[in-house]
Length: 212
Image 1 (cartoon, helix red, strand yellow):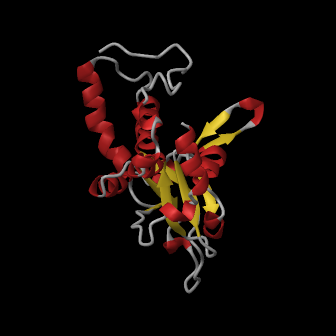
Image 2 (cartoon, rainbow, N blue to C red):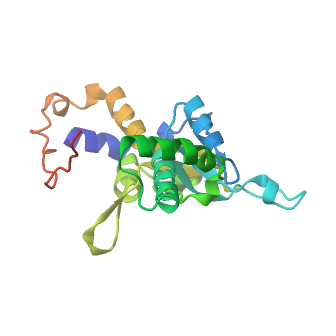
């Protein structure tokens, strides 16, 4: 683990930022159905939620306004809230539940993204700070941000923005893992250790599960 720590400490955030990253944006007045099609088309599970330029005064060249983040899980929670609101209580029998989904699904899909609660599961960092922020610092202070009470707030993605407020890069946990994997030859002997030997089997019990 020391090898990976040293690698993260000497690598800066700007080193793994793509120069031409294609960032998919969702606008607040887009329909939920449209958002799902966009996420599916790009094979992603989440995207930044921005204020639509149509709501700015004509001729005003304002920076992108980040309202939050839309994740597949946000849409699923929104659907459950919709079903609970229209069918209280929500059907538990499969046939009745399928009927409710067929009836309410299209109605829910027509709603705009702004009507569902977006996720705050992201960190923000100014582009210029990317040249001084190491990956170790980004993991410790952004992805695993300490909060009051000794707890840790986990963010699964980090957005890099420039002086005009526009997002230039999105970096996720997976990007950090891909970086480490691409430098596997620098991680010996840790790379050959078992999960148990690395001390990663220390999660808090119990593990929650559901029946089929």
